[in-house]
Every structure is written in structure tokens, then in C-alpha cells.
Image 1 (cartoon, chains in turn orange, red):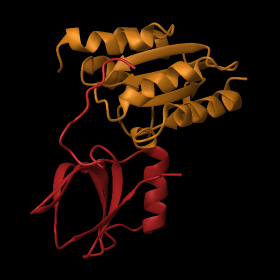
Image 2 (cartoon, one colour):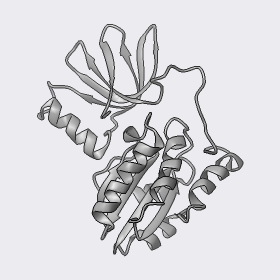
Image 3 (cartoon, rainbow over the protein chains, first blue to last red):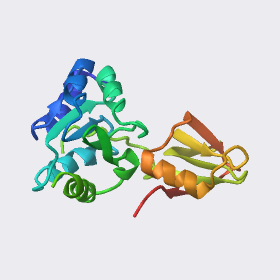
Image 4 (cartoon, rainbow over the protein chains, first blue to last red):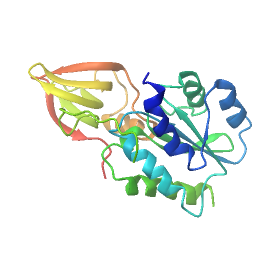
Length: 138
Length: 92
């Protein structure tokens, strides 16, 4: 794990968007167990190869008119238990970080994997997210 | 953008998910780490082996594309005489 002092700005880059950070198993269950409506889970990551693009992409996507009813984040590699628990709600989808899951009524309906984030401009990633928002959150 | 952790000293494919076709007929899918004298080092890799996998390569790749890379090896070195040229995975 990285020192919290170093990770804090990466957490805040997401939470200042109004995204609720889930730091424990009970936080995750309280947020996701009910499984009603639409919820986005942003799996944050330290690695700048991809996360440095994913966070600005999320910021841009959340300016879109249609967006999920609930916004959550877990931090992979830092909050291990919470991240593992969040991933338990993702069904067949493989763990990667950063990544973004969009759930509707408890089922994953769209997923942006790390491999779909690497090397892409934040605008392109944001477009993938807003297309999913238009499909499932309108 | 705050809080970047980059990896100086690596080539431009570092950290990018690539597909490499092996001379053996296996296909390797994972994050490119580096290329050295021994071969290509790949992290979080899935390996398609036509001798042991019932589905076609195309079906296997489509599954990885939809559900994400099903990691089989945290790190592998693909020998230089096995590794073909890398192609970036799932790039528009």
C-alpha cells in the first residue's frame, strides 16, 4: 500500500465530485446490498498509467445530464476489504483497477475495464460512460 | 489531474494491455511490462492455448473484452523466440 498522504489527493479528486467513498465491507453492503435503481462504482487506483485518465474522465462524465442515482468509489490496493466486497457485486466481471461499474437494480449493465482506459484520452472514456448513462439512467 | 504515479524509464507500451501471438500457437493477453533480452515480461496475463481450450480464439478474446482479462499469471516472461509483435487490445 502507498502512504495515505500520497493517496489522499487521488481520493479527493473523486469525492469532490460528490462520489461517496466506501472504505469498509459494511459501507459497501449498506450502499449496494439493496440493489435498487442505478449506481456507479468507480474503482480508484494509484497507477497513473490509467487512473490519471480515469478520474478526469469520471469528472467529465458526471457533468452529463443523465447520470446514475448513486455514486460510489472504492480504492483498490488501499482499502482492500471494501474493494473485494464491491467486486463481489460485479458478477462475472473480472477485477481490474481503475475500472467503472454501472449497476441497475443490482446487476452490472455496463463496465469500463482498465484495458478500455489505458492510453485513452479522458474525453473518450467519458463518452463511453455517458453512452451507458443515456442507455440505463435516462 | 492530481496524484499521478507514472513509471519513468519504461517504453510507451508499459502498463498497456496487449495481445501477443506466440510461435507455439498460444495467445497471451496482459499488461505489457517490458521487453528485454529474455523476452517480453507481461503482468496479469491470460493465456489462450488451442490445445486445452475448447472455445475459438475469437470467442475467447470476445469474452475477455466483455468481462475483462481473466488473469491466470500475475507475471510471465514470454521467451523472445516465442513472442510475436504486440497489438494493443480492444483499441478502437
